[in-house]
Amino acid sequence: MFERFTDGARRVVVDAQAEARELRHHHVGTEHLLLSLLNGDGDVTRAAAEHGLDASGIRARIVRRSEDPLDPEALSTLGIDLDAVREATERAFGPGALDLPSGECRGPKGHVPFTPKAKKALELSLRHAIRLKQKAIHEGHILLGLLHDDEFLSARLAAEAGVDVPALRAHVERLIASRAA
Image (cartoon, one colour):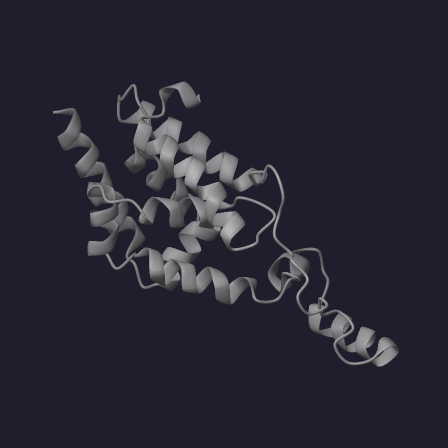
């Protein structure tokens, strides 16, 4: 599939790993792909900005979500109440028992793996390219993949930022169509 990616689309994928490393995340998720795309300077990045989606705003949202090394949202999907676990742990072991020691580096070393949802978003970028009768996968197709499913953190971050996601998708599709013409 990656042989169909343009240089710009490949840059988005490669730079997403750098974004994850910089944020000290142990995975590359849809949020890192979105952040990488928004750091570009092409027409898709400009279209996203016109709709209120920019790298600095998304980065701030990602940082706020990842300040706690334990992901309360992910744990709640497993039926685990992080606040209850934290309270019980601190009662047994003292305040801050779940905190990382100061100065400990949490950053990943080596390859940072893509999450299943990030892989799915990239697969959806291929499907969008095919649906739009395009042979190559551009940054616009990646953005369509990242905004395709409301379960993707990238789509939720865009919505939280006040973006009219269907309007942005439509704008990107018009850009893609105008390139093909």
